[in-house]
Amino acid sequence: EIVKCLPNAKPAPKAQLVCSKTGGIESCFLSCPSNTLFVPDSENSYTLSCGVPAQHGKAQPRRNSTLPSCTDSLAPPIKQKARFKIKDAKCHLRPRSKEKTKDSGKQAVSDNCQVTFVNLKCDSSKKKRRGRKSPSKEVSHITAEFEVEMKSEEVSDTCNIDCVRKRMEQKLQTAIKTLRKSINKQQFYIQFSGTEYEVAQKPAKATEGHEVCSTGQVLQEGKCVTCSTGTFYSGEHNQCVPCSPGMYQDTEGQLTCEPCPSNDGQGVVGARNVSECGGKLNLIIKALGQCSPGHYSSDGFKPCTVCPLGTYQPEPGRTLCFPCGGGLVTKYEGAVSFQDCETKVHCSPGHYYNSTTHRCIRCPVGTYQPEFGQNYCITCPGNTSTDFDGSTNVTHCKNQHCGGELGDYTGYIESPNYPGDYPANVECIWNINPPPKRRILIVVPEIFLPIEDECGDVLVMRKSASPTSITTYETCQTYERPIAFTSRSRKLWIQFKSNEGNSGKGFQVPYVTYDEDYQQLIEDIVRDGRLYASENHQEILKDKKLIKALFDVLAHPQNYFKYTAQESKEMFPRSFIKLLRSKVSRFLRPYK
Image (cartoon, rainbow, N blue to C red; front, side, top):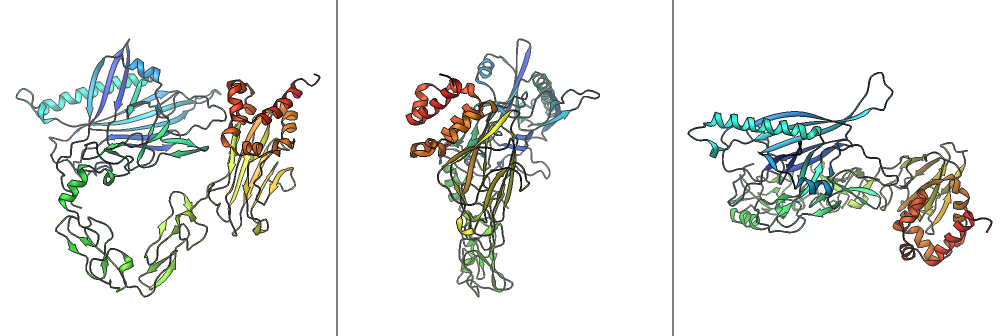
């Protein structure tokens, strides 16, 4: 592919490694204004790159290097690699607290090193102590690769290119030396979109009942969701923020947006790729003249040639046309779709045309096709798949993941693909193992299982996998009225099975574990018909926010005091508060 240098395209701002010293303590931060890529490799490791590596030899440009440099670099860049170690810390990229950030503003800068490219990998591993039974220690290993570009303006009569190179190497070595000291003191931060992140942190005690999402993800309806293209994860606000005009992001789960090549601050909010940037870039592309669909040229720009008979091209700016195949011809020159090829049969949605056999083939499982007369099927996104072949819509792609070990104070189980219809022929198994001296309370707000299947889709909760073990709950029908109940056993084995027949929305069932000393009180509440008598009470058991507040108090009774009387009145109807208060009073003061 031939790439042209676009006029008025300003170079992207460089990364900077800034180190400072206050009170004998070194601290460093790396600022990444553009060309960043964050890849969470696993729960305790990630890779982070910042800037664009030099393209000497056969090195490939990065995904965000949208426009080539129109000037040759002076000489090969200076490259240095360093390894660091942080004891008792995990590789979790988390926003730095605001108090620490305020303190950093008082520091005097001592080193400022402009960096062309940085590739940083952080990996946590367990370090076993020989001959001791003490718990293993977390150790974070950081590998950093730096590239610094040679600057032609620094070459002079008194210092030639070799002299400049030696100076810059020494400057980078000094910066890395300071960086090592700052990492040892856990004073190294990376800055994205104005927010500073800690590279590795001391393992924090997990807050019971609260799920912590990975960096680049936010919690939505109890699930960790990755920030989509066109947005970036803001650690300061803990939410996905759309890219501002003049910026774009074409990769999920990133910590910043990239500046558009035109760099003029124009364009749409939430641009998902360079083509959505707008502003001067679109005017430049139009001026250069991309070939329109149904046309091609050697570089995708004018002058263009029309696609000949028997070929088509659906995209603008392309260098070839696709043949219809199988000796098929098009209705006219300049065809823009396979649908313009004169096939021997007309394929309906859910099928694709095979140009060799000239027959319509059903889209295989895991793919779909919504249009007539196409010669391909579309693969389902992510880890979703279809129940059967011949699917016609992306909504037929369902998430198959379900089941697992559950042991927190609160949590939930849900049918796969919820709130969409669950897949056919699926089996999910969950195990709830509560902490010692705690029992399980479950609320089923509503459940949708088609009755036409003659109990082909079943949800069952019992003590163990044995069919003869104590059963707490079993259903194969739809119930839109909520129900709450306590488990008849300390542990729960939960199974959901579906057959190949009809499907439904399924369920999302929250649970909480409570102190067994409250067993009598909890059972008294959930067995009282007044809990379900009014629609107001039923809505409480269906409201995720209210259930979360109730479960929070049940799991940790001391949290009752963080809700004011006014908040309680606003959240719950008077009849509900009256019912609970009478139960609690009778339980705590039985002889009054």
